[in-house]
Image 1: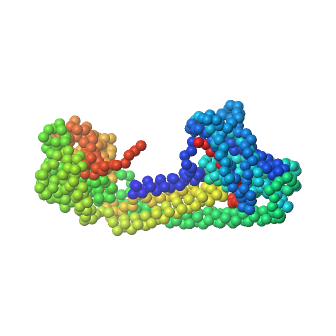
Image 2: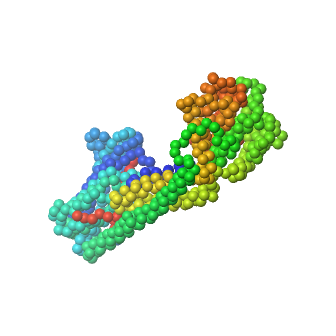
Image 3: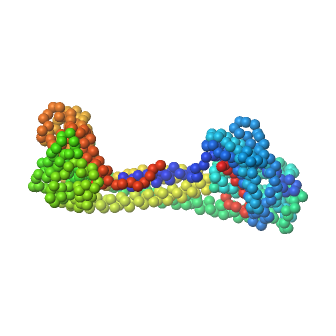
Length: 614
């Protein structure tokens, strides 16, 4: 159950903490600003000035930028017109020209193919520094002259390693004012698109452009702006472009409408229904438990109980009250209980050496079936004495017998619990089944709804969807946390009364060193109490208090106090640890540690720009 809780909370937390950001590979730099001015001349050639600001988290060798020459749909490939200049500004220093690289010196290296041009700039930078790069270059074939309009369909920003903090792009035509000027921008997000006919410009600004996102501009203007352009095609184009963009917009609008219906109506309704059902199941379980406690008279605060409520043995009691206990604790608690009952004796060959403590079976009368099974597991059929160190050795006879017989011992223990059960197993199983179904359904719906809503919120940038992601996640976690609590119902009234008494006994063990009346319990009960303290996780606490009591009483009646006095408060816990991690349940590990419009879609633009560091 605890592993399930951890898994669920980790999964939900991961979903919630992941919303609103895109998970990227770990990069050692970021791009804070990218500004691009595209000046179109009368030939239709684009004269581009691109300025990029990088921030570096580690020492790096330099940066690069790539310009794709891929053609768009129905277009000729772009042509590289050449690099005019590269300038670099390091931190707050002056701008410096970057020259072609010679040997191992700083400089740029150009690699050109029919599909792409890459400028790789070798410019070493230090950790926590800033570098601003300016590139001036030209691209040809960006503008197509038709009979009625001139068209640009271009992707200035394509996918890259890291997101960009701020993006500015300005398209400037040769002559102003522009008689005709329209523009559409396709990207995930944008703050502003401004089409200014008087200035003959299209200005685009955007923030937080994701690494996996691209930005495409589609524009047309009067062909008189580029009269010398040789990249021409026959026919009229304006109506086609408008129809194309309207089609993209309609698809985007329909997609947005569907996402709104699903994200703002359907998913919240489905989540609410499942959450209400799970909540009602939780309330019903709580009311049922509360009524049973009232009928049993166990409502109220737990009080200290000094007497062992029902001395059936700590291992059986752990099963009887439904307390999860490790196998090693069951073994040592049963061992100490049998020592306390004088069924097993302890002797010392050398009182200073705890590993030489010898354990022997002295009396097998009036033992329960699981206790007989326990003695067979520890001492074997011939009842040979064992020494303390055997519990620490993974391949000792005792450890091997424990490994081979622990399942049989636990099965006998389980059967003994059923014969003397105070847990209402039928009711508990029924409630638990409903609890698991409701919890699993809510987890699935929460994760599914959160994931879908987060993806919709990211793609649509509808803020209320982000709120729903957070609200549903929080509600889901709260309800699931209540539903993950174990549902155990006891018989009325005896079962609830005994469980209440054991809770009081456990509270007494926990507070044993701070009791107001400073009661000194009977020495003859010390060993018994210590055996029960193991299953309640209070062995060290009780052992420490026994040493304090020993100052005022004679301790001869306690067999277990002597090793505690000799070897410390941790003697019992160390014995549990030995069985769990050194002896029978030891596991070897083989692991090693060490005025336009802006919307999604594409109109088939050419090119693509990418920038990064190395």
